[in-house]
Length: 309
Image (cartoon, rainbow, N blue to C red):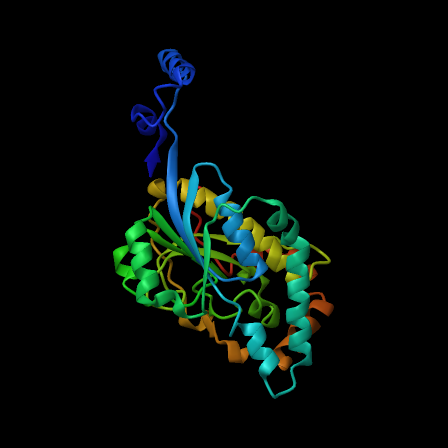
């Protein structure tokens, strides 16, 4: 954190700039000057448009300075993996290309017009744990590290920044963990499990201590991509609040969840058959069915809400 009042007291202004100095002195005497805290953070993310929205939006907020954003490249990402498969993949390819178009519809205007203050550098996918990358982060010593959409962190960063390393997990833990965690609720007819979990990161897969959760906003006529991108947008709004209130956040004890109510998915589970089921559920009114009894259905999947937010 940096305190602006401390910078003013240090002679960073030229002595020749008498008018500026006189103005500052008078301003301080009038008691109108207040300390502004700048929160210095580092972002770890991917290179899809949703990830660009994340880093640019966070960096544009007052009181937040992004010292560095580390972006993992698209090479070897999920879409590329599906494209290279030898099995039937037409529906999956269509689904993923449609997702990309909806991301453009939601995020491209903002990303194309906002000044980029996120200080991004690009690395190969999986290099997030390289010694050079880790050393650079440690040397910068940010107030907070936030990860969203990058590879699993397995380096000393977990210990060095313990309690100061927050992960944004698109999905509601512990109900859904792993890959595609806001996709599978459409397959399983469990829309109450669509949401985002903000957690302290650990060495497991979406197993860290939960800080705060939000549920997705779902409306009649929505499709999977509209719900997902709206949730991403809402999650970034929520993320800014968490950064600004991080020191005041309550520590909330986790609730017990029956192991039978938790699911873990891998990328290989994303099949043509699962997509057929998801789209069939949507055609058969899964959203209307959920919204008509939303309060009672949501009770089946309680979430953690930090009262400070």
